[in-house]
Length: 412
Image (cartoon, rainbow, N blue to C red):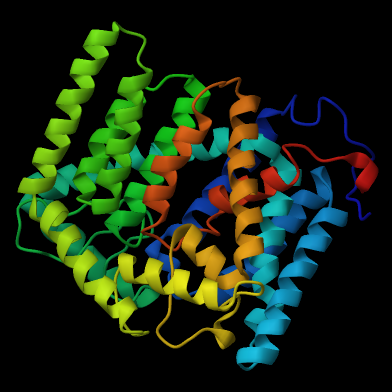
């Protein structure tokens, strides 16, 4: 329908990139990673909303398409759902106009510009982030002068950032001092759970691209997950390695023994570590009671899942919360539950299907044949603890699923 300056799409569309083009793509991916995740820009949403689509447009106008029927239909559906919610629940807000563009159109531009190749660049950038932030974290942990210097720098940088308190240097973030020897590692992200989610995402992508569960990068990144002390991260990691053991091409008896040892070890850790067993049991009881009592001002991931499910059932067709003006006070959500809450059950089912099909097409692109559905489990366990549905790598999977992995020039 609407077209960029390229005259056609060929089979070599995603190939033959020059070194200059490679650099520009890496720059774009670095921009996406830091501007959409770094705590430094946490309070700068309006700036990001304005700048990100424009920058993507400028890149896309040279090497891809600007729109087609599917993306226009998707945007139209999202705007109609938002309009219905505005009429039924609340006042219109500026988010009504820009949020669908940021959440759905910007990823479409990335898809048309880079295609599934995006994930190779993204994984490369994320690996660099993981390595250097882990080095800084270890230095900060074991060398008190380094810790003191970093925290002093955090205070100095704070007035120039959009962060809510001194915790970011743009390329590195930290947590509040807890008094424990090992602080939680956050990487560049706003909290350790978000770092754990990105690590699980990196492990998933690396498994697909390398066609291997057990390799040096997956082992290294799994070790880094441990430094986050993230409950959701640990559960997701356990599910990943549990499946990896089952998939291992070794003697059936040995596989059974390894899996049994793994289960016993996991249960032992669950029962003995306060931030796992006790935390989950307590939160499950308390937050479930909040949901049963109809509270809307509770806190926690379990509460968020419960309240999102309740609102989704109450507003099955149109959802509630597509934009902030129609959202119940105090209500928030994470993962797929939040999609069902915001856009309704029908859209939620489609989103889930597109998410899986997008991951399936990525696996096909890299000739990874088995276990894609199983890889969805750790990914969504980690995602269930974070508001990252529209973080570029995740929403891009949905767009890829919508297009079944490729654009159709006849629809342009």
